Image (tube, rainbow, N blue to C red; front, side, top):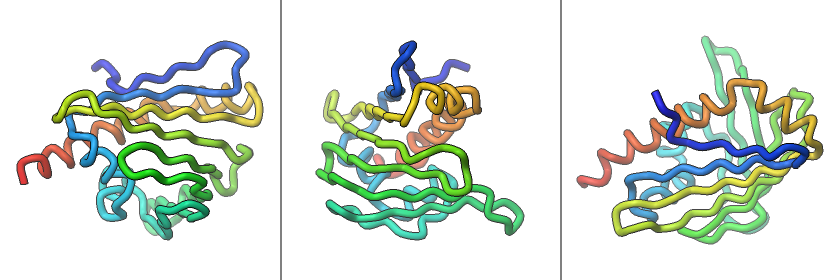
Length: 156
């Protein structure tokens, strides 16, 4: 099956670019990143904190059989509804240093939109280490869930 979420990583650059076109209106796509209940559904993680504002913070936690397997947190530096989110991202208890993420939301038509995520890493080596993990499949799966869950809300 083709991956709809595209990952681009140029040689010798400390960044990756993630793009995905959704059959969702812009406002509905942005809502998936803004509302705790929706975010938890499509990401499959628990939101411990989500302060959608400049200098806000967030924290996520994923558990399996009662054991925490993943925790991430960061600071929101810029939050412009239906346009962009700029934030840091730190995976707790991992060798990865803090990353900088730029999320840009763009309308295509009244019923479709595009998400572009630029992630900047401390080094090319850290970026390449992440790309060796099942990162691309994971983000594609999460975005597929986002599309499926919000398809039901389009009819509401």
